Image (tube, rainbow, N blue to C red; front, side, top):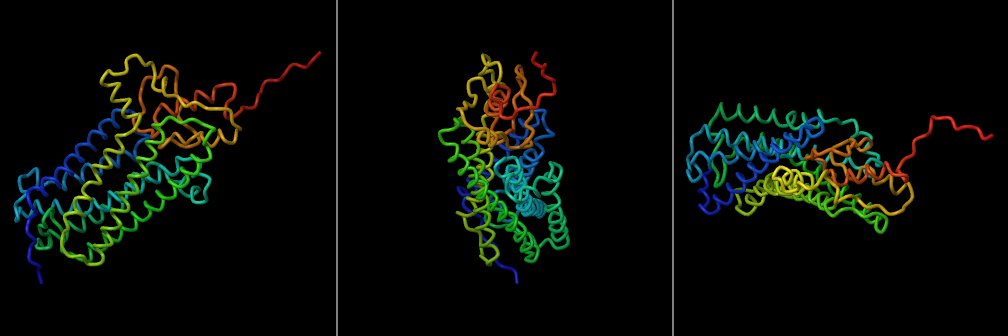
Length: 365
């Protein structure tokens, strides 16, 4: 028996909801453009995928707004189908691409590489991490599309968006998204604990630029906020919670905007923006004024820092930085500032590692 349709939300709440979606979609589009302009696509496939999936999902989630049907209680069925398919599929794909980001973050950290689980995660390459969200989400896309085309009464308008009445499919999508977000939460908490313990052990031994800690904190907070919010809402959905609650809807809609803001707070992206705007003409290379300053410490302490300043490059082989290099890395989490400082230190007399000499020493006479 069909339920009576819920009344459309007030204009104020609708404007707030769709403003969050559209601003976040435009923000992720800007981050995507900056990433593509970096010309280092082979290293940044996971983040490009993250920005692309969030951008498309948020944009079609707001289709009722930019087609002038925001307050229409009975929008055209075609718009309802598009909105419901992209929104419900996007829930699964957004969760999956977030898991791939935190996984990439995990395998890029040296201290996490010492754990037992890391040996399995290191087999993952960029291609696998990029394909995974589509492998999980596309089956739901065609399943929802087939259900709605066969029976258009299965899609309906809620106070904010269009939803599905096909309970088995809704439960399957919710369970998959819930499992993925639980994995995101576990990895995020685990990684946060490892990094906090590492920072505590480095106290008084190394001075790290404040932007490094800011970027690490921002991304871990994003993963935790998104996972905890999603898990709470998915649990409510599985318990049979009826109706759409304004507070939870607006909080969940804000995750896209928060993701954009936290990924924008990066020294590398901010440095690239200032470079394009001509605000740092006097600087010959990124990192001249913000290099890491190291104190004297034993080699084991120094080796533990070798890849803390990387997010996406392989932890054991950071890309070389040339003296006259002027290009900015838009996606390395700790930016060229931290990376340049580490590599500059590695070429000093007190380098982190010593290479065996292959030249024969003259015999003393």
